[in-house]
Length: 216
Image (cartoon, rainbow, N blue to C red; front, side):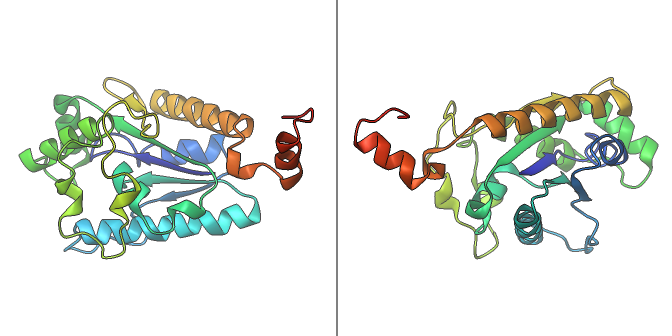
């Protein structure tokens, strides 16, 4: 299984990594930005990095290990990456918080001063988590050449295939946020074990269904 914990700056997505590693040692957990972020990082770079981490998930999948990536990936970009169909099970959540909380966290961190552009990006991600049709040009313009936007382009709000739960981290300590994320991950893993998709049925099962035999 490949799991992405996403969010805009100040949402807590990087801060939860130590706690996730401690509480979920069976997972291979990475920071989306651990390969270094160039000074000119843009949409194209982010999408290439997302494809890189999907391929990391594919490698782990072959070894029988689940993967968690925490960072700035975007749900619509994840679904449009060329290798995403090789992932057996995918789960993506968005960590979010109020603007004031985000500003305060970033100022305490002292690395980047919060900007209006950053708040607008957080607002777009918030709507994107619910509605795939909301201003998709934000991520489609100047995109990585190999992106497969047709994987979800045309989907509307309410489509069951579009599923990105939002975890509100406002007013919560890191341990509390980590607990919520762990609970969500455990639920997704449990659900993946119960979910047998049609393309996973064995040939024998299909033959039994065709013959009207028990087991259909």
